[in-house]
Length: 548
RNA sequence: UGGGGUGUGGCCAAGUGGUAAGGCAACGGGCUUUGAACCCGUCAUUCGCAGGUUCGAAUCCUGCCACCCCAGCCA
Image (tube, rainbow, N blue to C red; front, side):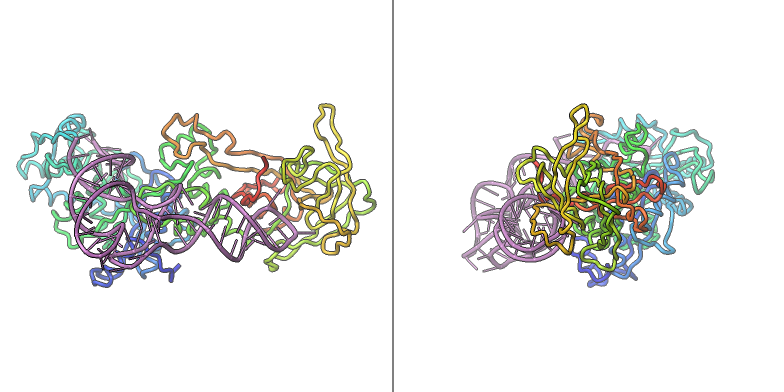
């Protein structure tokens, strides 16, 4: 991670700053989550950027919780967020801070602003403030309280702090310019009254600073050399700069904005994600279908794959919509080398081998064709085996290479079989198959001379373990969900549960993830029981051929 | 409507006056006891559009167009 020569406009800028000796000390960044929700893959982009830069430039990164709104924040999220960042592979070391750590200093800076006649206490109601702010095309109107004497402002602000006023009755506002074309500069609110318990400061405060006042000051106090945030804060930069320019502080970080990650068929808004949980569309915030880091983890996606994805998507100011294929690619690429292979059937179909007699034969198979270090296991073959229903077709599509009536196919690591008969139940559904095998076609010592076109996986009756296989797909059917009724956009097949089979050795193996040959990568649910192991599909294998 | 941004192949993205990197996807081929992996090859005469400057422009200038963000006492 260290020696990579990543090029993007932010890293280029940092290199220039270093070359021009504009940076005092070391490069310092921060990741500032608000503890009001779980981290998702969009956050991963920011985490990889901020922590990645610190790693590359021998700098430091603060993990700073932006906890200025006690109404929506809670300590559970603080814990979860830390777990997710660690899982992703980053370490803030001793640099864990909270915006609330700075409440006393923030308050002092606010008084300083009042003393400099740069802030005033405003008695207007929330509605009145909105009405007097103006519109995009109309300037705002100055508050009647705008020119209160310094002493009166100071007195009122101190009484706000003491708790003498109700929520919403007064705010502290910056005195900037009600005619500014940038609405953020029209005397923005700096402090509001919230009589609520804060997860860290308890009941010490009943006034809480707003983001625009807090963030820039925290950045400055921590010596953040590059304050990176997403594009929607671009309009706030003049305010960020204004605050730091109007208080007595000796450091002024530059705010640099980049575009946030958008992923096809995926929604990342906390509001909508929460709705999915509440309405039981998914089971929880860490459901394997969720784009949360916890969800990705429970789906078996390795942290390294997420990091690689973030590296490949780049960092720019352009709006983007990433295809899910890139993430899938990163996941497979990560799992390919290290994951043992196994055979699994989602829809088992019994096949009776008519010419097999006696004990089941044992066959050896490597866990990975190329990575011999993963070792091998023993499979068995006998008079009753199972194949996947999708690997047999009475009326095969063109170029079908699997089993068909009278056709032959290779059973992976075992023998070639030939279908002799299709057995049906009373409804005419295929119940089982009868086939013969070619004893001289044993894998590795085949002298049969037969050349089957395809190879399919199988599990013999005595070697079969019953498992649950859960296949996941996108949660939404629309590339850009959120524009329509959520319900109509949901993918009804985002989770399909199969009562399947795997070879016993897979269940006994300790590896967390497997590749089920010809199907995909799966994570063994660590919480599932040994009597019914559950496997979550992490990713499909790429398909070089599709029926129809 | 005012302000702030962004426009390079299907999706990302290099490039900052010298004649369009790379990745993903797609397509064709090789290899193959995973239709996987792997290996080869193809894929922008053109950089939102129109003018202009220049020997030379994706890069400079002018005008236009499209899209995104902003009117929380959220962050």
